[in-house]
Length: 104
Length: 310
Image 1 (tube, rainbow over the protein chains, first blue to last red):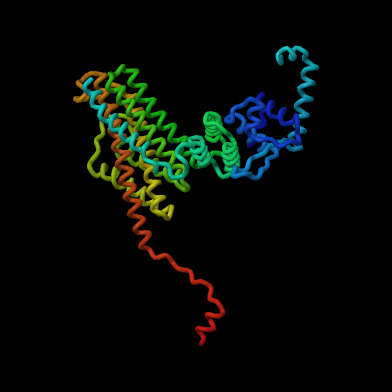
Image 2: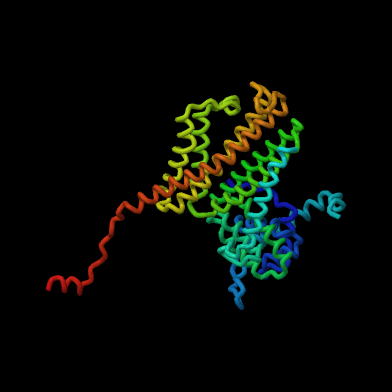
């Protein structure tokens, strides 16, 4: 049975980073550097997102004796999820303006 | 103090063996010796379940694009941590986690009792040797568990060895402290059961090499489980029961002696279970080779049929 827990702050950070340019494919290491997460934290997040259908993955063929590379970007469902997440956050902030202080 | 000096030659011998091992250029058969991150990552990927293999490959390929030893090592360490907890667990990961729990239990119980009863330096040296030994068998077990078709049969074989051993020696803690077994019990515990496990491994895998690996993993699992159980027995009974003559009649001496007995049992059972199991696997392999495999006749070509008719 799949649990539907609310996403962690790290997961939200990854989702937002991917949503900043949703059409762009990203490499795992570059994404880890961008969101400032260790590989041991990032990859389980990516796996969970892909399992829930929020992430698209693809392979870039290897070049110049380098191995192929795994690519990631948000799926259409993932984009909708991020939009809903942002809307819910805006609603919460509007209802309770004190939250702004906690976000600072 | 003199007891502690007994271990110095053993540690020296261990150091010589490690030095010889490190000088051997053939020690790594599947890749360059200097690329530790790659080897570490391959080890981690080998633990994955089939559903997660693609993610393991993704991490492995990403590593191929990174430069710098420290950067690569940090990336590999993080990924291996993720691979160990990535669900669903593969059979190899189940095997490795079982061994980690057993190893941690073994070292924790020994160290805990040495601290609780304020045992002497010799016991702490013994605890250090136990730690080195357990790390060694853990590395060996993780290498075995990664091989296809070995992890689960090896663990089951180890459980079978443990349960049979305890059934014959008695399940109570006092039975572990003061074993009172008849000779044929020992024969079954130490010879027959490991032999059967090794032979069954060969027959199950249809390959003596697989059977030998299963036998070794079962030996490690069985001996570590027995060690943990006997250590729990010492922790539960403490200085209760009759004092051991070897321990000088004191509480600390008795505890030290009982822990020492367990340590000897661990080394003895690991070695003997593995050797006998290996022999069982090899013997079953001989039987397999003697059994003629049915040959399937190939399709006869029309030309050949025509020639036969002529």
